[in-house]
Image 1 (cartoon, one colour):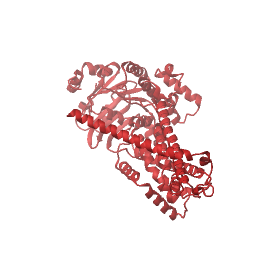
Image 2: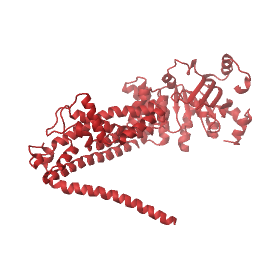
Image 3: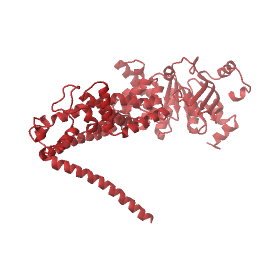
Image 4: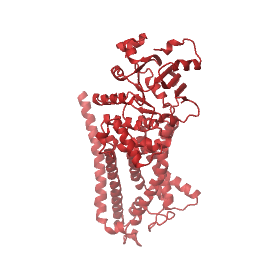
Length: 279
Length: 275
């Protein structure tokens, strides 16, 4: 009887793992098989020319660059906010204090809020400040989306900083600020991971940028201009009745997937490199 | 030998206590009427102790008797824990470190702490030792190099690491790391070295090295060690403080305490009746 139980659960685990893998491979297959034929140098090197959405010339360089600008801006802003928060709840306040745990809980809730809500909220904020749909608006909205992810993933490594290390620093006569500087160094592999996780999440989200960043056919040269993004590029092309344009959506998806793939491989690479220099 | 617990049965004034304490060996570190509460629990009860200068004092006692709490009180490491309440005085020289206007970093600088496990900083071997001096404003490369070299020599690590001062300190073995931590502590020129079971995570060979180090270092520093191993206390201590359930039961020169303990509890502990 025990033996059967073991076998059933083992089978279930294998089934679940294989299903996940199969789904992933199927998605990749669809994107590659549909996208690859439409993928050409024009796609990544040119902005859309007139009638692009009707199957004519051009590419989506505007969306590629838009997405990269957007994510660079929001990662920068969220880092400036998240790192101090994570440090504060772990090293200034005590790790398990009521305040710290309340804040962690709050970020867990924020983590679960659908991105369209952030988009709507960002839009509201923009109206309040009299901003139009622009790269800056998008950056703000995506930052809102990304901050909880960043805080929580930095928090996770910060929690595991040994108390002994902090006490060693204090015994040397280090002040709070000097202690924090060393701690940031100690958790830098975790910070890298947090950044790359946030990039992965922020770059692929369509709903946050729908109202806030807008869409444009040209490359944004100022943060006040609307900017195209890859997820929206996919969305618009996919809604086109022209089959050629629909296939371009898959090509755009392929580009986005490759960008994310590069980023997550670099996560692993940096993670390993950091831990190597730690051992 | 003076057993403080028995000398004055009724409450003496602070001044009287000071006299009692002063009759003990030359000391720059005196603990007077120290009471520590953690989460309202009375952990240290009326501790009076003076740490003899340039000697090794070992604090022994069964687990949970407050050895570590006492050690940590000596450089105010309880400061950040809101659940810990400290009453009483700890005098370093003439200065009460628990007085209101004392700057805590200034106190801690005088105490080199060696933790149970080595706690190397996430930086190179050189930077680990240079960290303290840099905090105190020493910037010149040459000066820093001299300090680092001197302290690494003092802990017998120089020959082992002189060709790889730039490698991350975490690459050293645990025993080497512990000696590095000692060198790092010495680099801020403390007056005291506090060791909290500083060898318990080390292999026998590294332990021996650290113990030898202490024996050399006591020429320049007063050393306080919390230890779980009686043998270690026997090997290296000059004075023994025996604690039990938050009280200091017996304090005296280690040969006296080991050969002829005054208190029944001390005798039982040394005999291994409990541990």
